[in-house]
Image 1 (cartoon, rainbow, N blue to C red):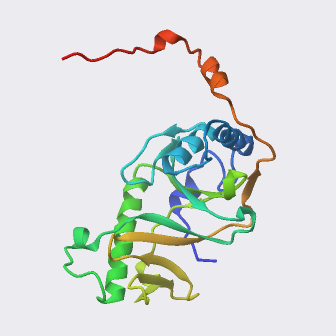
Image 2: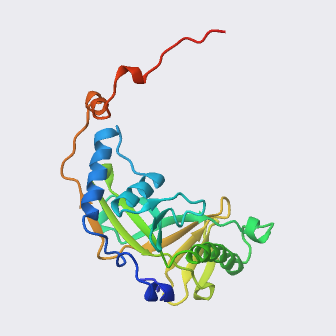
Image 3: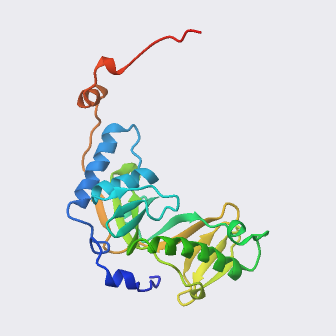
Length: 248
């Protein structure tokens, strides 16, 4: 497992709930959300903003979409980044690749060349951009977490886990270009692949371990709501609709 540093603010300031120990009824609330999706959508899907809003409802937090993408959900002194990843078998997942923003060394450092340059220099720049984003959010919140939803086929099974969103010490990693022209970062001690950065598009990916205490929600049964039931449920009547022809 990748080494994660201790964080002073995390240790000194109490969080609304312990790490990866979600509030009571969180799993059932999430299950209800998924069943609602099955009932109302032709194809059950949960994407970025969907998951942010669902997470906020499940933990009684506030959804506040952010340009940075690290503090989209707020609960007291804690901010969350919400990520979704497809996985054919969530309960057996061991690792996930998380797209973690676009880190442009051209924009941030004025580099005029991004491919086949000194990999360690480029890697340090990529991590520095990430670290600056995390630092900016940690100035406002005592706790910063990433919550990952592993989406099984047809959303019949999902897994959820969270971890502290941290800054990375550039000295702990070395970098190299792979055969596809992407930059990869490795832990110096364990030699494990941790980061990938694509020079064209600047996409930054972090590889995370899935903890043993993964929360799994399995949907045993669901149904579809017919159109008339939904319309009746929202109190629909014909005067909600206005129809007319435009005249010049």
